[in-house]
Amino acid sequence: MPIEVLLVEDNPGDAQLTRIALEDSKISVNLNVVEDGVEAMAFLRKQEKYARVPHPDIVLLDLNLPRKDGREVLAEIKTDPTLKRIPVVVLTTSQAEEDILKAYNLAANCYITKPVDFDQFVKIVQSIEDFWFAIVKLPPE
Image 1 (tube, rainbow, N blue to C red):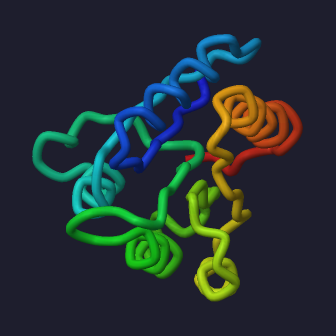
Image 2: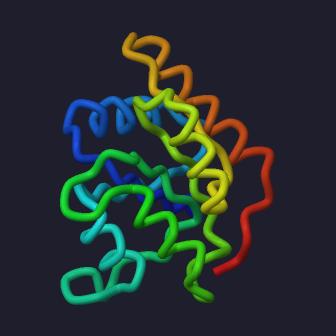
């Protein structure tokens, strides 16, 4: 069975880079992408058009999102009894200490700053994949 990944990313370029990086995977990955925090929560709660989507094994979450930012999404995930076990990897451009502290205070599982260089970005995504999909035992649905 593939690893179900929810990518919450409003930058189509970064979403495409993530998709490309995961395509070379040794592990079967099903990537779903939503572009803002409102859509992320609808996906996670299987509301409306997301009624039949798979339960994500992991969420890759950008912080700077339209409509509902990543900090709000993280807080909602980690305070929801049915969602809080899903690992959330913050993958964002922010290097601000306050964002890093806030993410961990909201129970992010890890915080990664996106590099601007394409090759480095691909390496980061592949490192996430190697660690979270091959080494870590993810919680059952």
